Image (tube, rainbow, N blue to C red; front, side, top):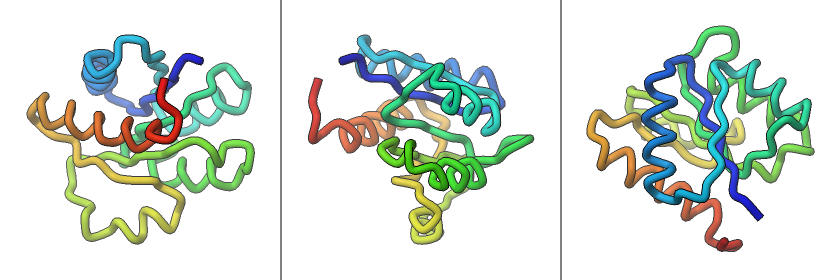
Length: 133
């Protein structure tokens, strides 16, 4: 079964960078994207995509990352999806709050590709450790 990961970000360059890192980690991944939380929710709701893991930017127009996670967690059909927020801001002091809204983790958006690669690798491992390919 193919592994599908979604990136939700209003910055197309960031989407491209995340997709490049994800495919460097595992070239068999299917990478989907959305430009804001509402776009992502509509794609999920229509069953257009069925990701195992979603990386969502904290700060976006229309529906930001926190509100997107709250919306997703209101729908039990999506409970199996792992959700990781990311931001350029350090949210390590807010991990309890982020987990309380339904996030599985947080990644600080790094400025160095190797840090992004390592952060995404850790999240992917966490998502698939019980169900390897």
